[in-house]
Length: 251
Ligand code: IPE
Ligand code: IPE
Ligand code: MG
Image 1 (cartoon, rainbow, N blue to C red):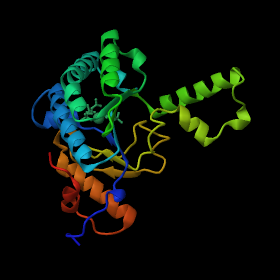
Image 2 (cartoon, rainbow, N blue to C red):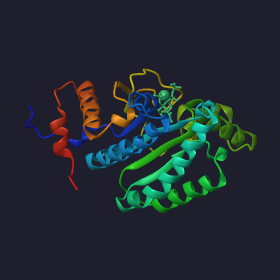
Image 3 (cartoon, protein in one colour):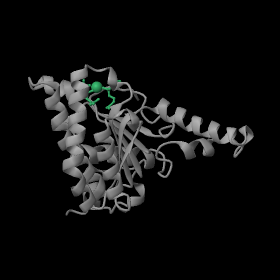
Image 4 (cartoon, rainbow, N blue to C red):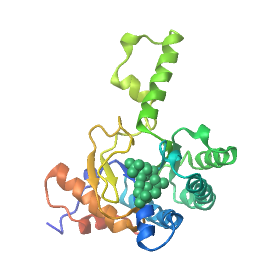
């Protein structure tokens, strides 16, 4: 059925990606870990572009977890510098392509200059109507649920809410990305099969896709393979990545 036109309704609306394996990929090339993180930016660019052309609603990329502060200080510092550089360099392009950028996570631990960069980037792109790109930075699924519960507790203290009124919906409202549909498809690269404290609540029913590719090797073709795997799992028919390609608008 390769010539059958696919309907875009079959696509996952929200894809979450754990971009893992930069360090191992760099090591395989005989290079320092930072080299892997640098080349990772290219994979991010390609993934965002492909998701946008495919007409996906939102992509959430795990860039730095709340546990990643435990890495050697030098690596953390280099990752922060890279984050700053990417924000400086790439935001105009995202804006030109009508993409909406959000940084999700506890931003208070970042330097003042990085927080300012983040706020400016979010402000610039906030009215855009294309693909929503969430970058999870200093994010943890347990942190997210904790901060939501804290906000609920505050509204109970202020008597705006009662404990009897707590429902899954009211908790969801306070979680990060509450304005987006839950994750349909979660992709993790590098062969590791764990969630590593990513979006625990929002991934309750996600299809989980694991690939042995290291993140710096990930590209448009790899995304299309993951999405066709998703469609085949959900709808049980033989969709191919070529059919997906025909859905993409090639700019
Ligand atoms: C993912 O690659 C990037 C971040 C967590 C920042 P890693 O740095 O975890 O690479 P590996 O897993 O050590 O190969
Ligand atoms: C998960 O990768 C976090 C990100 C991709 C940012 P890690 O490489 O930090 O995960 P663990 O520690 O191996 O589970
Ligand atoms: Mg890793």
